[in-house]
Length: 346
Image 1: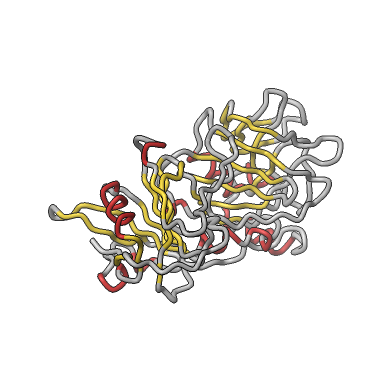
Image 2: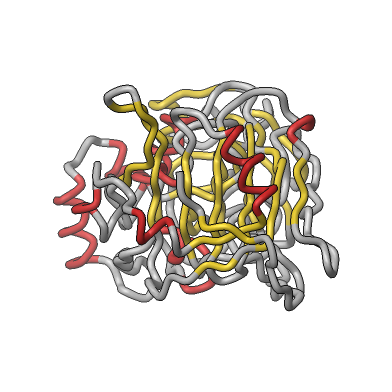
């Protein structure tokens, strides 16, 4: 898997099938850097994705390995001119966007993807190309590749970098949820650093299941009976969060002794009749791909014994574990002594 940060110099050129390398070269030579900055490189996608306010026009990040399966939700923030993609309740992507200009404002609300057309052309604006179009309303509002000057300039659609639009098109389904919020005319100072989705796949706001003072863990598997399981180990918040089908079913305090500032992803597999965790090669950690988590690494994570037993009983082949410095909305962290804490090993 690779992180991709691309320039969208012009929607028409992009739609003509010009190779990406050529587009990048043309952009560097012909386009002012203030309008279409080269995508920044990052060695740790979740950390890059949470620093959304540093993205320049045309920059984006794509880290699908963080949550390889589960329901997809797209969240467009008009105030900051960004969009975020969540899968199984975890952010896997972030991008700059350009939404409706004055007089053609992008409507806010909860939408479903009504139509998908990779080679769509506008029936309203001179047959203009709208690559990787995902229609949100029948009167013309859609997600699609388009110009990204760094401010709202569309006729109501949400413009995306072409590479991002292509990747997004490949993982969404008809009926998928898109939430549009904010105010493009008044750039509000907002901050949303948690990796967790602020809405569920029905567009309903999610209240983070933070732990109350003195509470060590919560476990509610009855909320979702089946679906992909994801575990987030947040070193910054000293929390473990468990999601199934995008719904948080568990959360626990933890002691995580790991000085590595980067992110790592592991998946549960069965090999030679035994189950184990193996790394997925994320950007900056490609050499880890297929490497097993060793005992020393597992022993850096400690949690209440009862929570560990409940969690390990729910883990199955295909479960994903993200170890990260990103936040999970823990709220104030109580100072607790985990008297029955246990090391996280199999």
